[in-house]
Image (cartoon, rainbow, N blue to C red; front, top):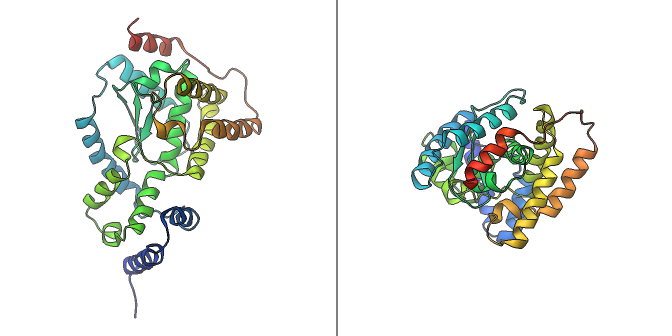
Length: 276
C-alpha cells in the first residue's frame, strides 16, 4: 500500500519519540545531537511566517529602541553583512531592544535583535559586526527551525510538524526561549555559526579578529559585573573555548589588508547610548 510522505514522517517521528521517552534527558539530548542535527520540518516560507508572529509578540512585550539614528545604524550594519551572503534565503531585519543587558539573538526568518547594552559596551564596530555575523550564521544554517523540529519530535508533535497550522510551531518556539533570547542551539551549532561569521566578516570588509576582542570584553564584563552578560550569550560554549576555536579558524584564512575594525558612525552611536 502506498504511504504518503507526510504519513511516513509522522510514523518516524512517533517511533523516535517512543524510543527516546525512556532515555534520561542528558542522554536524549546527546542522542538528538547525533541523530537529528540536520532534521528540519519547517520550510523557509513557514519559518518567515512564524518569525513574523514571534516578532509581534517580542515587540509588544519588550521595550524597543525608538531612536532612528541607532536603529538605522544597526540595520545598515546588518545589511552590509547580509550583502556578502551569496544567496540570502530571508529578508533580514535588525531591531534594537532597549535593554542594558549584553545580548543579541535571532528568532529565525532573518529577524535579529540586539540589546542596546551590547552596543554600549562594545569598543568598536567590528565587535558589533562579529555578533551580528554570528547571529546571521544561525539564520543561514536554519538553526531555529532545526531546534524547533527536534523538540517537536521529542514532544511527539507529529501533527504540528506536518500540519498547516502554525500555532503549534509558535507555541513550541516560545517554550524553547526563542522570544526571550534564551534558546541554546548546542555546541556544534554555535561553532557552525562562528564558521559562518569568520567567512562572512572579511567578505563584508570587516576584520574577524574583532570577534576575539569581543570575547575578551565579555570575559572582563563577567568578571566585573556578573549577570550583566546574558548567560546564554556568554557561556554556551564558554567564551574561552569559542575564542580558541575562532582563533584557529582565522589562522587558516588569508585575510586581505585594510579590513574595517571601527567607524566614526559607531562611536557616535555609542556616545548617544551613553548620554555623552
